[in-house]
Image (cartoon, rainbow, N blue to C red; front, side, top):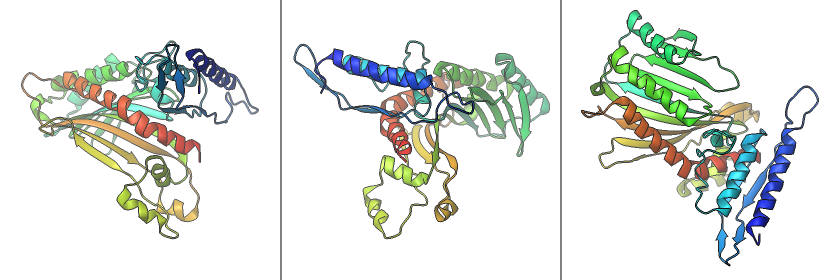
Length: 348
């Protein structure tokens, strides 16, 4: 038990110094950071304040597999929230000194992304002129998007150079328009990009608000995991009590476990939210016991169905959906899903 706020700050400062020390290390072979997993935990710390009052914090942990400002700022954020009750610990989108609003999500996974999907009732015009003009207008707003190509089934893509950092992409399918931003440094930049695309579609692709089948925002997280993904999910999130007993069957090994939940956010069920998982472990991996490093994905989708009402537009409606998605991620997904999942992967 820490007897004062000063003691808590001292412990947190020590943690930060440890993380900062590891971030400066180099290893033979030219690697710029050691392949070491540093686990720093602040768990159920009881703070006794000067006025005699006490505050018990929640359970928080950080298991970064990369070092630098993200880890240090995360620890500083936790310490500040413990000392100052007014600060919302779960708001990982808040600005920290020297950090970006979205970097909090980056401490939990290898990659994260914010995507927009607009589904239409009618086919999107596929003429050469209209398609090229649409992508030219997108490129005019984001000049770094220089790679244009076509896929099967009349899908066309414009994207930035894919590398280790953030990158944008936009695609058009026969009945869907998509926009994505991978590893954005700022959440507002991703939302602005998707709104810009939505402002173009009524004029460049003749997609009116009446033609809307669904409009959605997807916040995705990819975890690099070597092992049985289904077992990792079962360990991190648990199994439905009605099914848990099946795991005790002799010689039983989990091959597929992808829980999902979908719920409405309004009375008429037009706005819905879905949390789902995608594992990439196959029966062959379980049979041989050889598990390659694959991505275990978490998806948070908030989607609005049916046509837009008179007076509504795509850009404003997407902004509303993005806010709902961000609030659900910060207040529910991080603590209940991302943190336990990160911890389960780090312990394997």
